[in-house]
Amino acid sequence: MEDDEVEFPGARRPDRRRWVDSGGVRLAVVEWGDQDAPPVVVAHGGFDFAETLDVFAPLLADAGWRVVSWDQRGHGDSDRAALYSWDADLRDAVAVLDSVTEGPVPVVGHSKGGSLLMYLAGAMPHRVSALVNLDGLPSWGRMSDVADRERSRTLRREIGSWLEHRRTLVGRERKPGSIDELARRRGRMNPRLSVEWLRYLVTVGATRSEDGWRWKIDPTMRLGGFGPFHPEWALRHLPGLDVPFLGVLGLEQEVMGWGTRPEHVAGFLPRDHRFETLEGVGHFVHVEQPQRVADLVTGFLS
Image (tube, rainbow, N blue to C red; front, side, top):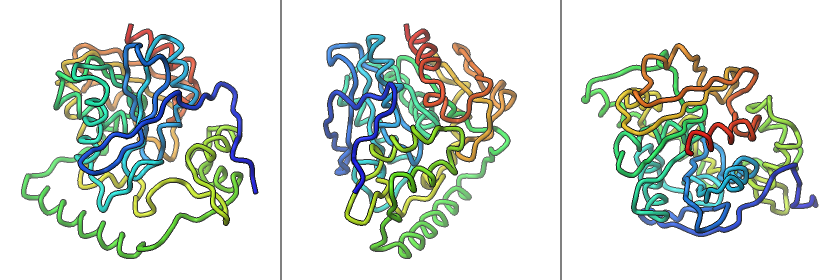
C-alpha cells in the first residue's frame, strides 16, 4: 500500500478543523493562521477541495490573516446531498460566514467559488467587505438570458435530467487507482500543474481503501453541473457590486477554465475595482503562482 503522506514544497495542512451545519448538510471547515487574526473566507472551485489551498492559504496566514475555507457540499469531507444547486451552495457560504463573524468579511473565490461569491456579494453586500475573484469571471460570450417562464422550464428539464443521471449511478463509486493514476487523471484537466503537486493533491483530496484511492467527490456530480443556474449569469451582478473588487485572470487557456479574455469582462467591471491579468499563467492562478497571487490579494485587502 502507498504511503498516505506526500510532501510538496510550501504546503501546510490546516491548523484547525471543524464542522458547520447548513440546513442539515454537514460542511467540513478548515482554517490556517492565528485564531484571533482578522478573518478572510476563501471558496474553492468546482471539483476541488479546501485543501487545494494548502500552499496559498499559509501565505495569507503568514501575512496576518485567519484563512477560513470549506469543502463545498459533495466535495471532500462535507456531506453529499440528494440534489445540488447554486442556491444551496450560496446558503452554505452564508452558513460558513455566520460561523466566522456577524459582520462584513473579505472573501476570496477561485473559479466556481469566485463566481459564487460574486453573486453573494451582490445579494448580501452588508456581509462582504471586499471581494477577490481568482479566474472565476465567466465569459460574456457564453451568456444568454431567458424569460422567467423559460427559466421554469429549464429548471424542470434540469431536475429531470439530474434525477435520470443520478438513477444510473445508484450505489456507484468513483474509480479507484494509485496515487500516480489519480494524479494522471487529474492532469488531463490540469495539464499546467506539476506531477508533484497533483500527487500531493491526491493525498488531501482522495481517500484510500483496500482497492486504491478515490477522489472525495460525489459520483453523481457532473462537471459544470451546479444545478439549474448558469454561472455566467453572475457576470450581470458584477457592475452593480458596491464592495471593493479585485479580479485576477490567468491568460493561458485550460480545460477547466472559462475561456475568458480581458475584453469579455471589461464592460462589466464595477466602479471600485482593480483588474490584473497574468501572462503565462493558467486557470489555477493560486496554485501556479501562489506567492504572486498572495501578494496581490494581501496588498489589495490591506
